[in-house]
Amino acid sequence: MKALSRTARRAIPGFLQAGDYAQTDEGLLVHSSIRIRGKYTDWVNGDDRRVNYNLLVDQGILYILEAALGNNTALATLYLAPYGTNIAPANDWTAASFTGTAGEITSTSEGWAGTNREEWDAGAAASGAISNSASRASHTIVSTGPVNIYGAGLISSQLRGAATGTLVSAVQFGAVRTVNNTDNWELAYEVELTDS
Image 1 (cartoon, rainbow, N blue to C red):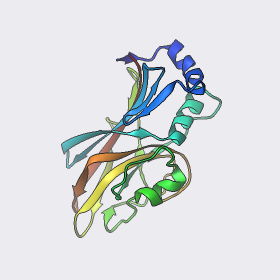
Image 2: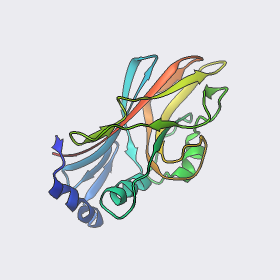
Image 3: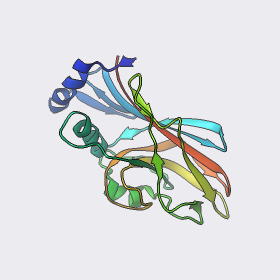
Image 4: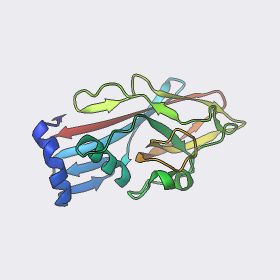
């Protein structure tokens, strides 16, 4: 795959308005050749790397298009939020429904330390992608027993459990990620926009 050309970027809104797209498990396929997809990569204590492709929810797709090609301002900061319910994301998930539907892990005694969601500290976009892989979100697990993480979301609200803002994407991991007290669970997210 190659990076998206300027011509293709300008054509995307027309393709979407004409219904020339398909939502897939890995993102959005526009005009049969333009792929918008994201992937979550996570590690425990620097090992056991796992990659899972996500769903760009409707709210996230609209945000990306409006911020990149429309008149809306890009959000200053986005945050990563792990969740603890064994559920696959749906297109209609929003920031307002994410915490309750996905069971966001909000406990600081049976979850992870800190009162806020961890920042998605993305580097510069290159080769049709942008990610925080150079600055992964790090979660120090605090628990008396195992904590099961079934997935995560990328959201604009900093406060854990907040039902405000914009949900950009969400993923259900292919296999539950079980972590224990004092583990360091790291999470990276990447979005790529390519033209085949």
